[in-house]
Structure formats: C-alpha cells, structure tokens
Length: 192
Image (cartoon, rainbow, N blue to C red):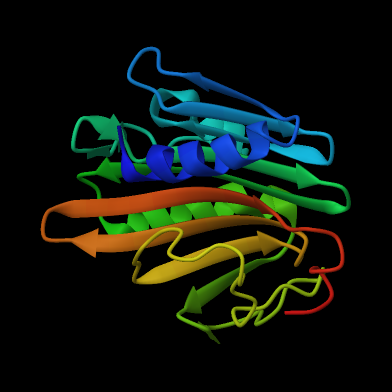
C-alpha cells in the first residue's frame, strides 16, 4: 500500500468513527479512494483514471504518457467540504520533439481559454504578463505544491479560480510536459 493510501486510511478510520464512509478501489492498477462525510467528501483517482481530455487539452501528437515506476504520473483530486471545493486534474507526457514545438502547440491549445501567459517561476516572460481574468505568474496556488514538480516554463490560461497550466521541461532527448486543470476554493480566487 502506498504512503498516500496509508495516510488516507488513518484519516478514513477517524472519519468512519464519526458516521462517515470510505470506499477504496484498486482495479487496473489504480489507487482510487472515496471518503464521504456528512459535511462533504473527497475523491482521489490516480494513474489510468486521468486522460488529457479530462484536463481539457489535446495530447501533443505522438506524445506518450509518463510512467512513474509502474504507474502513470496522473491524478484527479476532488475535495468538497461545504463552501470549500478544490479540484486538480494532472497528467504528464513525453515526446521526442523539441520544447519549442511543444510550447507552440500548447500556446495555441490554451488560447481557447483566453489569454496565455508564459512563466518562468513566478516571473512573466514576454507579454501579456497577466490574463484578462487576472491570472499572473505570481499566482502559484498555496493549496497545490509541485504540480508539476519542475519545469523550464509554464504556460497558463484562465483566471485565479479556474486555470489550465502546461509545464514544459526540456530534456536531453525530447520534452516532458505536464497538463494541469485547477479549480480553487471560492474565496481563494481573489486572494493569494
């Protein structure tokens, strides 16, 4: 059992004693956990449960899903407790093509969500430096860390409450990139 499932197991045991239910499904190599409480719940799906279409972006032509050990480097996390709703969908891919080609593809792909900004860390590269919905490179979410773990640049579109992010990492042979869809809790949109 993975460490994340063990931690969720302890939390589930505590919640179960308070009239909650916990469902864990391990099929097709996936680690799926669902916790329901009278106050809300949490669903976590990993591996094959997430595809690029879930993130709202097309897969770069010829790219392959990145495997982390035996599992896909993908997740779908949905937390809903009253007014607090956090949703993260992420998946990583790899291609033999250059990072410039991947960047051009996803700049066009992200444009359907509005302005696209290019970030290197917390700093904008080029223009625009902020989307028309107010998203900037400095708006790195405090709820979600290391999604994706590292990248040379990030392309972002959307607003502070609903974002699409493509993190692009140049490698010795080709490019690794992560696709992320992020919905933040209400009230967190305006402040960071």
